[in-house]
Image (cartoon, rainbow, N blue to C red; front, side, top):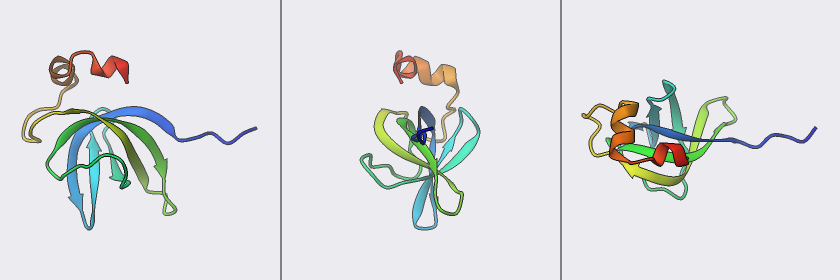
Length: 96
């Protein structure tokens, strides 16, 4: 049986500092991911809707590799409820 690749999914939440990296606190599934540096530039305090892949690093820490910034949602102080996100981003969630 061939090995399965990383799971592709949309994620939304706030980007937060974590030592020398950043974490995404995904409000959709209440998980925290260490962000893998890559194609999308993110800053702490930025609420985002992302497309990307989840995986685990060598220490079994869940990671998220962002492939596309779908929507910058303004400020982490604002609520990121699914209805607020879909209202602010049109049908971006259904396209992910």
